[in-house]
Length: 135
Length: 358
Image (cartoon, rainbow over all chains, first blue to last red; front, side):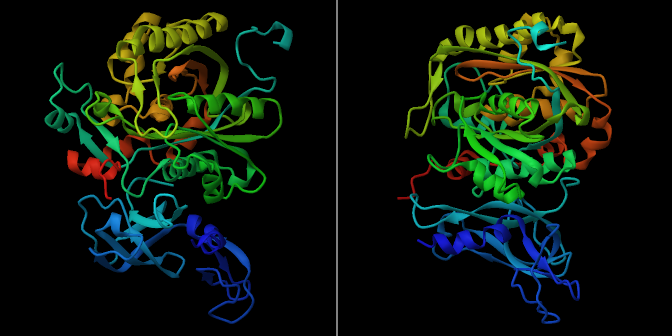
């Protein structure tokens, strides 16, 4: 059981809530309270738009513990339009083939259950191909 | 109209309210009726629907509610922190104990000054939440309240419900009428104890009373609710450009509409069951979102839900000018329906957890 670990980062996981540096204005994700660019204190909340593009990707057919029931799936590095790169699963691909540079948008999905079917459900960001319309 | 002059039956808050935002959600997978028929070879008739929407492996009422609510917030143009309630009606809450609403409120950014709760009244849990939201906003307790009807509907393998039990729903933000894209002129709730369909604690699939689900349940409650609303508001079917009814299959709402004096033209745009199935607590509300996507200022809309057990909530709506600039701010219901990946029965069985993994 890893309840505190998941609970602590729920805002960034559910809604891509990061930080913006008040000194150099760089956007920070995940939030770390210290700017990785200028080293200044950066605690101001910033909600990312959720739009970005695939920087690189790979498909998993043999998932790690907790992900066995959802294989196969594709994990990608997503370059957010504000700059940071995050690692996340792609979802709702349908028959679409994944390509580097493919525009994607964030959705909040069920990631896995903590342990067996009695465990808490863990939700967080995934990305899907852009194209439904405005948000 | 002062309180003493109001009809004693209608639900009309002291402060006029309406929908200031709405948002639909339909998952992308579709199971054709023919795929169900191929496996179960039912004796009578074919599939009542072309296909139904099926939630993916990483979707449930919480994730679907989050997306519909984000669409509703985009149209409303308010911050999530302005919501004083996040209420979700469903038959498929992922937890037996632990609210869906807390996860949804947190994901939207609506925490911490917010009332949150999950509603249960079979297929009318979503409209029940809307009635409560009307009370909260209409009494002045809060300016905005979010009410959602969403389901990943259950049906036992081999039951006729397998054809129709679909996934989807819609979210509505209730707020002051002067900010509304559709004003709620009146609501009316009609309830009796009628055991037409139920699911006992810890049971995976619902039971239903076969033909008992028709006349004494669906038709009696829908008809009584809509007829009383029409009578008490002094309106008739011809005053409404659109009507939306709970839609467990295509035939029931068509017959209910016809008995109340509505024609096919008035119900066709809100009749989504042939292409997404019966989304239970989401069914009437996503029918309404499809209508709001095309309605014009001044149009009147009658919406009547039905929940087994049993009851109906009926609403008389009037669309305002605000619809024109707000509806384009989020994906339309039609865009979600057009996004489509067909799956076979085996994939459906896996997606819906009907496959024993251990």
